[in-house]
Image (tube, rainbow, N blue to C red; front, side, top):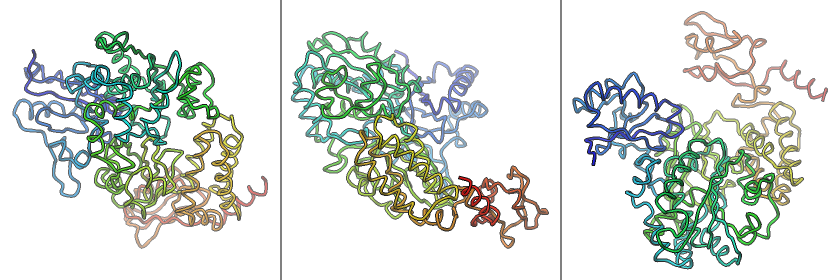
Length: 615
């Protein structure tokens, strides 16, 4: 057996691969050979480590030294200092921005220190293409226990007692869903996995499939035993090629080891599965639309009842769980319901994975116990705002179907019940963080554009209603808002929620309702004052330079694409308004906050009025 004094666990998830992991790996291999260390140091490519903002990243095991933002240029020095001279290379370590010192150990870094890993238990630690490494970390022990020691009723009881809820968005009790399907009588049942993940800013499921594909397969095997299914399908969007590749490798290895196919582990139970590639339609996140897609039909939802547990794929009893739900099944069966309930709250047990994106310093994938305060996630784990001079304003939870939670509610515990009270939803786990320079009217418009485009068009409330609201938001952001628009948007939203066929239409108005609820003043400023205070809506703002603040550094002039900023060096500059296109480049570049945002100038108001009359 090969023995190495160190293993270099290099992140090979999609983010780090895009940031340069393959080139860095090749450079390290070359340098190890030059130094005669190739037989002492082993490179292991893992799945997503989670700390996406710092990629490419690498963990030196067993020392647990964490390196970030690796580059080919720094490789020779890294290898010489750490692996030849035994001195960890501080330059590539994570830096504490407050105390300004390097943090060498991964678990001392705030981003990792506040997490509790269950779904992500193997992230960054194993080669996702090695079934042996998964088995070495208790992989398939839960499946063996379920197949050889437990009845379907025992499995379902364990999942119900644990309080496992679906992590795809609705939070429906997983054990109850399995129980419904288990009681359905049919010659064929289907166990399905939803790996479609269509929310903008969400990458939880993709990362799990890339980093730990066997955890999903093991969960499906256990679920299949519970409901009496012999066939399974993993539905993955075609835009996830790395996840598809690793899932297929894992399926092939399972068949070779007798973990899929006939008479698994000599238990008498047979189950096999395949991958189905989706075309990326957001509506196929809805379970009945996903099943129609697998059947080769257009992905459109159908009325319920009948529910999929009685009549699903090919009109047979079917269960659909998302990736995160399935990834937590094996440790729950292995360790028991009491272990699962050690985390979370009574109604929201266990942990939850979130994708942190937006105006936040530590972009990445995090897992925390249910009930963790939102503030802990954003500040202790996320590191606060990307620009430390900016204030936190809101966080969009639940993707385009979710809502915006404002700064005054940042102390809420993250549970299904508490999040819903704010007007948002848990969703699959996307968190888009926004700072004070974000226009909330424009944000609502952005998410509504997405849901309007993704509507399948089957029901009129969603197909027509979202378009009507989008046109109204467009008018408001372009200076054509009218008295009564806010009330009309609220009324339309409530009608669409009440009458749409599926979850897409029923939740599409959430961004509008939540932004009106907490940021109504911004809507009123857009409509009545024709002013976007953040400068995002270019038709509703102007930019001026404060002479008493401007230092004449020239940064704004260099950033301006129109040459609209003039002035002598080290003297206050000014903006030629006739040339300004309100692109906000000067505002973003100025380090002295000398650029001020005001209402649109008179010429702009006139132009808006003329345009309004023409329409």
